[in-house]
View (cartoon, rainbow, N blue to C red):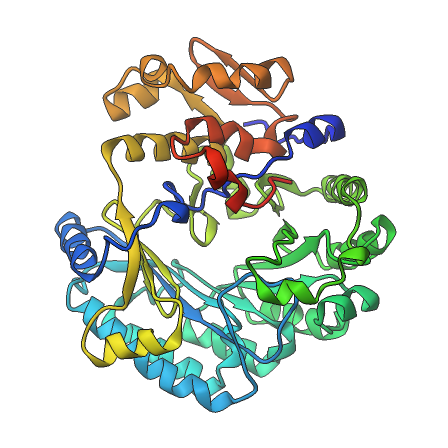
Length: 460
């Protein structure tokens, strides 16, 4: 497939509206408290009847310091004693869920996110992985996709060695920006030296893939300053690179209120940073995977996209076929047998539910047949950038053009603007439209409309 990308500033400005990131469909906005523990248990029973591999996610919410830009569910504390009782709760949750899941089902994916997973000390990391192995069947041949998010300020060579021994083979390093003024403005002081020391350790230990995360649109960033960070990162040739758009939503995320809005780059400057960064990444040989993700051409993400086997879930793009996702910890989101559910967000009700022997489900939903069809369309477009009507219709028992007679006319302006091409055989996203893939997906989302759109971040 064509993985080229064209940056068209005028089109991007025109299409830069708010919209979902589509890590799920329907999105979390549609979750309802009518979905609870009983519905989740029913979904687990259906999943067990269907069988197949599974994916596990563990949310470690603790952070030593607060990064002002952060929109994650987190607990900022310097009290390291808080993690051990939390691991006990995770073990209780695993025990309740594992009773419903056969150990014959292999864990193809595992991910620790946060917060800061490396807030845990070495003994606690070992404890959590040992407990996971007791409850579920992890692969021992290094073929699973077992990943962890790393704050380089909370890791060293010994810690990276331990993580590799525990079975992790993919690592994601938070960088954001190396400029000292930007770091001070967002309260994340992190040197390039300590970051690259962790990256080198990961490579020395044989991690399959090293990814680095940057954020553009932070206060005091300029084109020149951000490119200096990007150039330093590119010198290390990470396998994957994520370049996230900072979404400033201080009414929703309290830490963001500590950012001086006068220091924020203007929209035109933010676009200039993005354009210059894409030019740099392209010149360095990276291909655009989708949304904010780039990878080297021989990385498994890029290969999977060319082969038409790329997938997407709450952890982002993945090479593994879709499998039910069992998530553990406060605020974590599971996707099981066509149902999506979220745990309670706060520690006290999370602990109270588990101490009472209950699963801590707060809200969720089960997809209708229409949801399943629309989700399949969105995932096909957001992963493969194309959709074949005949193939899709056969797979889902519909006539595509009849079923989406309401949505297809809304794509017409995108045809005129050169974002996509559409004919009797299907839809193909063109290089000019790849950055705006969220816009291409939105006409197929039957829930968008009214004030709901404004609950999402801008697409660029």
